[in-house]
Amino acid sequence: MAEVEETLKRIEAHKGVIGTIVVNAEGIPIRTNLDNSTAVQYAGLLRHLTMLARSTVRDIDPQNDLIVLRIRTKKYEIMVTPENGFLLIVIQNPCE
Amino acid sequence: MFTDEALDSVSVRSLWRKSQQSEQESRDCQTRAVHSAEAGIQTVFTTLSCTQTEPQDQATEQLLQQNHNEPEPLGLKDFLQRVEEAVIRELVRNARSHAFDGFQVNWGDRSQLVSCLHCLQHPITQERGLHVTSVSWSCTGSVIACAYGRIDDGNWSTERSYVCMWNLDRRGLSPSQADLVIDVPTAVTALCYHPSQPALIAGGLYSGEVVVWDTSRTQDPVLALTGMSADSHREPVYQVAWVPLQKKGEFGVLSASSGGRVLVWTVDSDQGRFILNAAYALVQQQVSHSSSVSFKARGSSTVGVTSLALSPWDSDTFLVGSEGGLLLRCSFSSKVPAATPSDGQSVTLRAPAVFSFRPHSGPIHSIHCSPFHRNLFVSAGTDGLAHLHSLLQANPLLSLRVSDSYVFQVQWSPTRPLVFAAATGQGEVQIFDLGHRSLRPAATIEQRGAGQAASCLSFNCQNPHLLAVGNTDGTVGVWQLSADLTEQSPRESSQLEQIANQVAE
Image 1 (cartoon, each protein chain N blue to C red):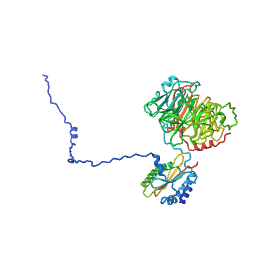
Image 2: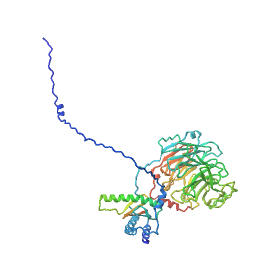
Image 3: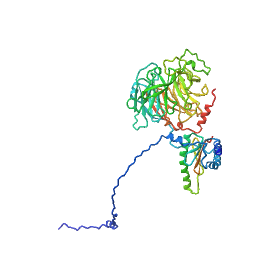
Image 4: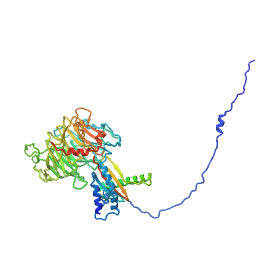
């Protein structure tokens, strides 16, 4: 269990990372360093988007699969890594 | 010899008509016979059930489980180990990447001009020549309320006045006739809409009373009234605001008057009155003087409050500006008793002043705390300058010349951290952008009609491109701002941070 915390701490310690959220298969955030309501909002919205992105990639080429979904916005960048039901969401502010 | 000849007529057969007709064919068809059958049924037993959704926030609180003591879900450790490297690689690459430097996306039509959408006026107030003293947008952003009175009147006046409301999203909006008019017995000097309930609006009157109107009531919109009791103000109320109380979701009304009192009331809507929750009195001697300017205190003269601002970051702090130019930072939780004799108040008076900034050279008409930085606020008064202060220093960080006459109100833009607007006595509204190097305004809204002053302004937080400006000729202009004044650019927050961290000379 300590490894999970350590891994998340390593990711959070990176330059510019604002928050991380780990979402389980039901869409509920299980580990996060943001506040509850924000985490739940991100989890719910990004789950749908990730499923849609994944089905788009597989429709185009069934041998292919989604690795990372990155959304670049004016203020920061959101990276979603889906795998085996879990989702890892990292929000980073690329300092310029 | 000459006889009439009768000739047979000659006819020529038509060739083309027949050739068209030769192609004709006819067919017919019929569906099979339609089968029909009849049967009867009857319900044997019935059941009834109903459902209702629960309010949203209860559900979200239960969803998140942060139990570190519970054994973690299966596969979480493996999942994280697998993705960690890839994620860290991408994060590092991202931090170094210049791919998106200077790239601006353009989603909608950007309007380049500042234009006047509506010019609202009400006939009765025009006839009587009343000035607009305060404007306020409702929490939904569609209704604007305007309070009328006089800003230049020094004498005690008993003329009746009005509060008019227009709903700008209505199709039948008539700019020359208000949707709702509330009669008020004296001039209204301050107005503030409730931050979450769109029908409640608090107002401060020239006689020192504080009123809350409920516009959803058809009969009598007055929900609560302080009346002339020992608790209420004796001087005109220049600012009202809704403050969050201890219990989450409840709001009380804060009123500040030129008698030096700042009072916090709770609304008792059943009985239609206010209950005094906390009272603060500002007295000259108790104001801490941290600057080098010395004040000769003559007796226990009160500090007349002409403007007040609540800090959106710290619920304990509020800022007060006075008639004499004093600018003070005050605290709600101060326990120091005030040095004035109490005249039968139900709550003991406290002295809230904690820190005093460098005083202005005239009455301060307006203060506003920045919604983007916890330490910054802007203040303006009759000296025609807008001062940008940090809460941590006594001297202002920046002083901008807004106009040659009085400045009646300043407000920060709700969407751009570096922009604020100021309403001047010459009738113009100057909008400043601190990101520009020059000290000149980024945009100027000039209103038609010379000799009138712009007495109040308010940004619409729901539709951030709307700005309402109230004038002394009784009209309220609703202006649409251009896209570069409302859309935030990527580096603004860090620029604001830099400005705030400057040390004042």
